[in-house]
Length: 463
Image (tube, rainbow, N blue to C red; front, top):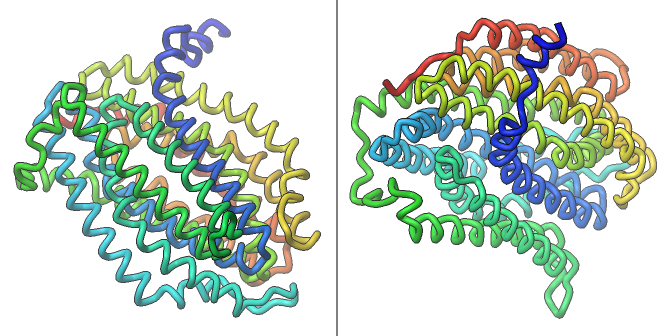
């Protein structure tokens, strides 16, 4: 029995070397990005609870836009990985052009929404409470940060278009290096502009926003310049801008596969924002505590996020090349590897949970609540690692409608109602409410296991 389990779920040395060569650069890039976000968060948190909460709310709203871009590009990205597996350069060009159009449209829509309804969106997270938080101040700081952050959306958009294509074609080091450079720029500028060092004005949350925007454009410059200067390694870039037309039949195919992903990511991100809004009815201190907990959790989550991305790339290329059984075997081992890695990461996260909130300039009650939330997030990390890998498994074979039902429909039909009812109609401790939402995902784990095992995702969509 042990031999069968080992054969099915444990790979050899060359297998893990192949997986880590793809996953580690993504892990490093995301890890450094989240580490600098952590430092950024701590810097803003040193100013005060209201500033930290205002920035956290805007970042939660920006998260919806970020995932809209991710979802909008992911449909074409499935084709990119499989076209690359077939060495079809013109196919990759078509997916690239489609991504540009999709990203531009989504960014324009996002700017309109934030300009017209930004204040109302922020206000939804600011609820009257007896925890002593200044809601008007939090709204003021949130609006300040939002107006500055909007200037960085075009750069973010272009980085996602280029970097996603590079990764889908096996080039993960360049986006990683660009991301590292950008976050270092962000870190330095945060220190200078938030606190007003070396004769610069102390701009507070505005300074944090400016630092982020400038770093976005630095990252864009690096990624675009490298891609166009290395035509030998990126042959699809030759003639890319001779036209922005995409054949109609391909647009139809991209939309059919991509629309469920776009809707899924948008609804999923909106659901996460709704969950946060449910928790926020318990007061401004809860918003601050969730911000602290999510900041450190995001740093540790890069492990299963990178391994999930690797599933989409490796398995997608094998499916495109028609190696179906190899794809199944690879997928089983990658899911098992992700869960095992995240179990170890969760143990480390549990150890630092009581220590990390002490870095913030907020009240003891908020720090204690943040520590409990970090522990809860650590306990459910292996579960989330499996769900993330299962999601990307289904997506790699183009089963986008299934992923839509599996992901966003589930969270809106199960997770959000649990949070809504428990936060408004009970006096349950907010950490227990969070745990109940995670326990609701056990049903999702069962569904994901069945779908992956049945192999419904094993198909070549670029034949």
